[in-house]
Image (cartoon, rainbow, N blue to C red; front, side, top):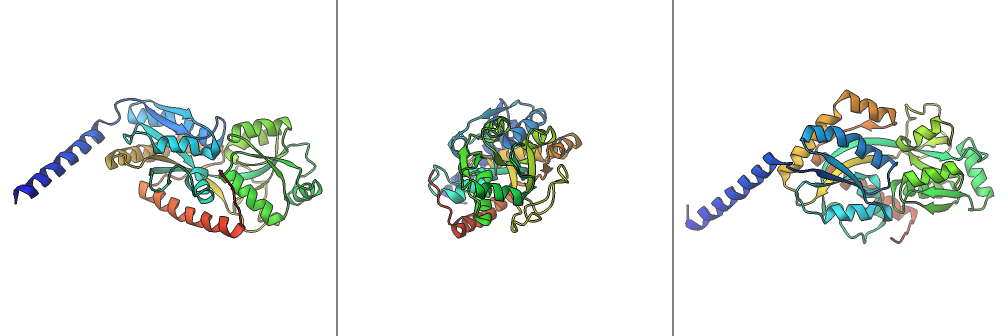
Amino acid sequence: MTRTSAAAFAAFALIFAASNAVAQSYPTRPIRMIVPFSPGGNVDITARTVAQPLSAELGQQVIVENRTGVGGSIGTDFVAKAAPDGYTLLMASSSVMVNGPALYPKLPYDIVRDLAPVGRVAVVPLALVVHPSLPARTTKEFIAVAKAQGGKLLMANTGVGTTNHLITELFMIATGARMTLIPYKGSGPSLVDLIAGHVFAHVDQISSALPYVRAGRIRAIAVTTAKRSAQLPEVPTLAESGVPGFDESTVTGVLAPAATPRDVIQKLNAALVKILGGPAIKERFASLGAEVQPSTSAELGAWIRSDLAKWVKVVKQAGIKLEL
C-alpha cells in the first residue's frame, strides 16, 4: 500500500469511526420536531401523537414546534437549512413532500435534494365537509348550490399548495363548480371559521375534522379516497357521488436535513418503526381515521419521487398555475 492510499484509508477509517460514534451516542439532547402548519390540524396531531412514545424510545424529549406559513414551506425551509445533526426534524405531509413542490418550481429548497426521508408515519383520507346551515347533504346538491352562487360560496383553504388546496382545485375543475377560496394557515384555523359559519365548506383530513363531524358541528358529504372510511362508513366517496377519478389521501412522514449522518437516520427510523408497531398508537391513529403505515427511509424516498412526478403531470394537465 502506498503512502497516499494508506493516508486515504486512515482518513476514511477516522470518518467512519466518528460517524459511528455519533450514531451510538445520539441523541444526547432534546430533539425539535417542526410542524409546518398550525396547531389542531392533521400534521400537528400526528406529530404530537408520536412525540411522546418517540421520546421514551430515544431517551430524549422530542419537542413539537409549529412554524407556519406559505403552505408549509416556511417550516420546511427552516429544517432544510438546519444543522444536519438529527436534532431538527420535520413532520411532513403530502402537501410538503409532493403537492407544494409540484405546484411551485421556485421553492427555496428542493424536497428531494435538501431533505432526507426518515420514514412514513400514516395515511389519512380527506373529506368534503360543510357548515350545517348549507342546504346540501350530497355532493350533487353541493355542486348545485355552488353553481347557483356563481363562485361566491366561501370555501376554506388550509394553505396555498397544500394537499387540501390541490384536491379542492381538482374538484372544481372536475365538476365545473367554482368557489371563493379563503386562505388559512392550516386546518385548525380553517375548522374554527367553518364551525363559526364564516366559511361554508372545506376539504380536510378526517383526523382533524372527525370530532366536529361526530359532534354535528360540521357535516361530511364525501371522502376523497377510492374506499369509504371506516370512521365514516355512511359517507360515500366522491366517485360514488358522481365525481370519478378521486383516490387521494394525505401521507405523513418524518424528514431531516439532507446531510444528516446515515447512521442517525437509521436509528431514527428504527425508533419510529418500533413505536408505530405498538397497539396503543395504532388504536390512537385508527380513532382519528388514519392508518399507520411505517416504512424504511428508502421506501419513503421512492414514494416522494414517484408521487411528485404524478402531481407534476396532474398540475400540467389541469392547467393549474399558482404563484407562491
